[in-house]
Image (cartoon, rainbow, N blue to C red; front, side, top):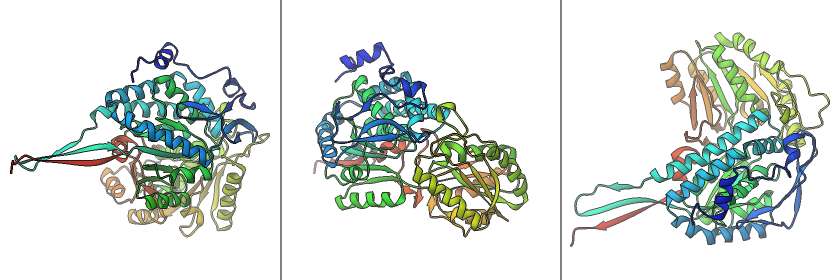
Length: 509
């Protein structure tokens, strides 16, 4: 296999390899459907599916595209093709695998506007966020394509009579179950790491938002990836169950709900296979006495309003010292009162939530919070003339730690503010939830801030800043009901490999 393959040469001549004419409505008209069907893509080719489903645009409630939805039998076919491709891919030099991933990153960048608009239409998020997601996706492919050659084994010093070496081997075939909220980023981050170290992959994006993941498969062909190495099959719960329980799947990466994650973990445990679970979150901002409110408030607001709060790392709780409570509420309220709702391509502050049931779920949280005594401190105007699944952002004050809103994940644009009297109370309040994904500590006293951050049982803790999920280089994952294992950074390369120890007796005895 070589980068001088015909597909790669063709892609080199024109980095824009997606069919913009066929996708023109996604690029130019936020009301129209895409005049193209998206079949399954596995074994290096487009595959006519057994069944088609309608991909609904959450901003209009209309049909965006018609997409293939995999059956268990089709999942089995894809796994078999991945299994056949895995040995050859694992035997490919890391330098070649890396070059192909970097090539894929170039193709993603060359098609960035097409992909960003597809992601925006598919998920409902504002266009600026869709563009940021594609920029991050390209960076994932580039990052893993660049560092894999430096992913080294270890030698263990046992003296002159022996040689012990630990090497990192690919699992074989990895499964990637991708949710609907960040399909462009989550597919790239997990698949990029897995491909880099030599696994063949089978990706199941959600039926609700599969378009960009399917485009990655097309771009991978143009980059010159071998057939069967990257397989993308959208599907629902039936397809997910077939994939995660398949006997030829050696490792599962799952991002989604706690309940489904536990089902995936059981399926893997039954086969004695590892799983990486990135589940829910109820991330907290701890605003300690002496914090800089002018610095904290815009970051807190943006982190919550991002993608209408449909982010597992969204900072949905603010635990503020009583001395700063009034100042913080005054600083946060305008971000909610002035937030705009609208179609993603118009780039509003907030787009829709993903579906009608999700919109009703979020409204239920809002109604129950009000009934439990939470005080409405800020709320955007409802969207007039829009037919999609819009929920106006809400800022609640005086949220009790005993309430549902304080402890449970909403996955919508709802922020809860709670007051405490000390740093210790702030940490205790942060732990008053079953989740442990991310958190932020705001304090001018850096010693106090570091001590507080280190006391938090989370996978990522930020000080005087907050980047939900962190950058490409930062290991990401949770504790407790937020899951286990780590995506991103060099840690992901370890997740997608298994160590093997080689021992050589040199004593001659």
